[in-house]
Length: 184
Image (cartoon, rainbow, N blue to C red; front, top):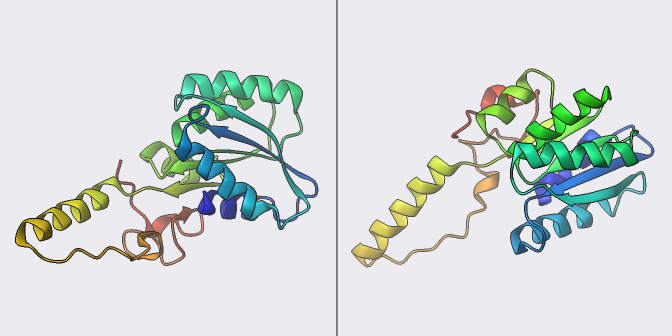
């Protein structure tokens, strides 16, 4: 959520007011609520930014599309649509196209191949990268350490490590996309 908040701040630079729609995956899902709270904490420092709609889109492009279509009917001047999942932004982008609304900055989360392509093509402002292959490697290494009886200490913030992230961190934009390879 912290990095989604930072991406929203970046997308809203120079926009006043900057209205944001935020798509969570599931209503009441603790991880999504934590991400939303982190976003709200970050943007609270910026009086030009406000979340005007938060909706659950069930981690699907189809629901991202239908939820966004409704959001855009009520808020046709939305500046940014951000989500906890790239797949929901795939649907949100289609809803904006279908409504004939241009200029929205889309921000996904996941760093998927679809999200990465949309960023590099300039269709999306950003995606926050996940690294499932690297996470699996780390988990396997920790399992081997546990079997070996080695003390396992994992206190490094892997989102600030490069590689697999660009030196600037996990917020992938056109400026740093060449330094990242999607893992899913």
